[in-house]
Length: 103
Image 1: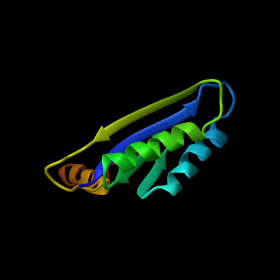
Image 2: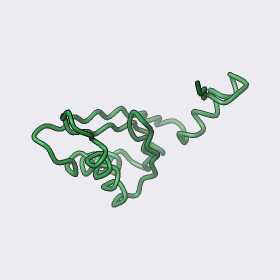
Image 3: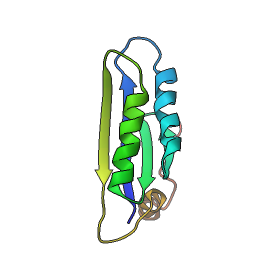
C-alpha cells in the first residue's frame, strides 16, 4: 500500500519561512518516505500511515517558533497501490498534455 499526503509546515511569522521550512523538509530524511517539495507544501509517499504520521510529526517538531501551523491531507487508497506521479499522469492523459502552464 502506498499512502500519499500533502504536508505543509510553517512557523507563523512575518519573516521569511524558508529556513524553518527547510528544517521540516530535512526531518523527512530520517524516515522511509519519498517526497517532493513545491511552493505550497511537500507531497510525501510512504508504505504505511504509521511511517507517514511519524514523518509528519518529525517535520512539525523540527520547526522553531512560538506558533507553528501544520496541514496534512492524506490519500490512503486501500484497494490499490498508486504512486503520486501516476495520479498526475492520469490527469495529463485526459488533458492530452502536461498539467503545467507557465506565464
